[in-house]
Length: 333
Ligand SMILES: C=C1C[C@]23C[C@@]1(O)CC[C@H]2[C@@]12CC[C@H](O)[C@@](C)(C(=O)O1)[C@H]2[C@@H]3C(=O)O
Ligand SMILES: O=C(O)CCC(=O)C(=O)O
Ligand SMILES: [Fe+2]
Image (cartoon, rainbow, N blue to C red):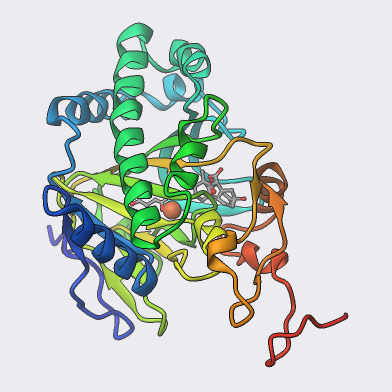
């Protein structure tokens, strides 16, 4: 039987570029600058020597694989995702669909332990695997955010990580499972959408996948770049909230997953978010007469409501833009 190629899809609209890979064991001020450059140019980079133990990553991967291997009727007991729980093919509430199934969980420990009962036959084991993983990637997320604070020369370098460390942080975790293409007859090469184009609404996303390709990022010029998978690395995405707080200097990256492999892709994302009542607005350090505020202040709960009322691919940050003329003056509408 002929099977589709496991390599990333490359239409004439994709190209190979050197995606920044940053070694976190190197000199602090050098990596702070490299990270800020990557966030400005791509809104995306990879990290190596990240310090998250392999054993912790492996345990969550195993838990994810054994959950997705269950019969559909069993998995449905943890669903539907509204928004948390088990979801299959439906993404969000407004008709977006993808060739995947997933678990979406709030990172609050009480919520995880409650949800685990419907997900696993050994809820304590599952719950520990998830909370240990969250602890590891939250540290990594905060470390990267502090480096961003340093690279931007902010007065308050921990302004971003403080939101993530807050006990009321609205961070979420997602495990996506893109089933293998078993029968080439069922595979439509024109529609290999695993997860459609979008940006992540939060501050920063930390993604780890197995060795199956699929992730692509969109460059400023509109070209799509396949991201080679590497289970030993983490991918880091700038989210909408970080773009707003840096007054557009760091770019929230648009990305998607196109899968067509003979092996299933498993990806795990930590979406670092502020508390619901936190205010998001361009930081004073990022605003000047030459660079007036691009966004009006909004609360995270307001932003989330907007995100959930829209489609996956909508540019929701535009709703919060202040209209300015070419001279930088505010425009009365
Ligand atoms: C269609 C949607 C799914 C989503 C909520 C939304 O209305 C728009 C944003 C989507 C997204 C993308 C990044 C994350 O995967 C996610 C959990 C998030 O916070 O925003 C999803 C939402 C979701 O799947 O519930
Ligand atoms: O699964 C992936 O590789 C990407 C998924 C993603 O972008 C998301 O869940 O927001
Ligand atoms: Fe995403």
